[in-house]
Length: 188
Image 1 (cartoon, rainbow, N blue to C red):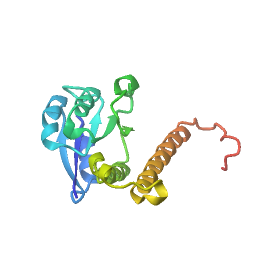
Image 2: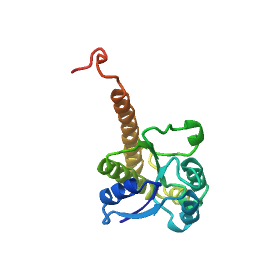
Image 3: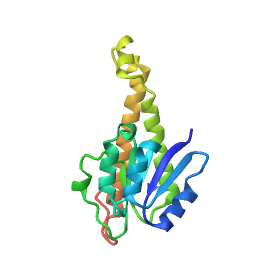
Image 4: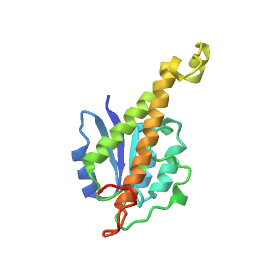
């Protein structure tokens, strides 16, 4: 299955980097360098993921992501914000937008492709669960150990929480100034 991914960023070098890192066998890519054009195309594309620059011409990344969240066909789209090296991320503008992460440019394009695929695979697994109306007609087991679907969902949520914690820890460690001693008890 090909995932539909939109890259909305004004930089030709970012576009080229993403084109090279996202294999056509797994990703169907759509490119926009203007926020207004992007929001007009969103309902027709129904993307699985959106990689969007914060300072997108025509309509900034925050407002474009907000528009996307208002579209029923895009309610489960994974959003990754792309910010420039000297660009600040405004958490207030991003509040309530349900995004995966903020990626700082320049970025490791292959790592981003792997991370995006992992997020989309996980979201695809969750989408394959029965709708609430279907689940209501089935008898339910008493707990996760007796219900394999529930156990799988719990495992995925725990994996996601662990990945988020690991990401925050990596960022914390990477922000540590050079020459600063490691935390007590940490191995060198």
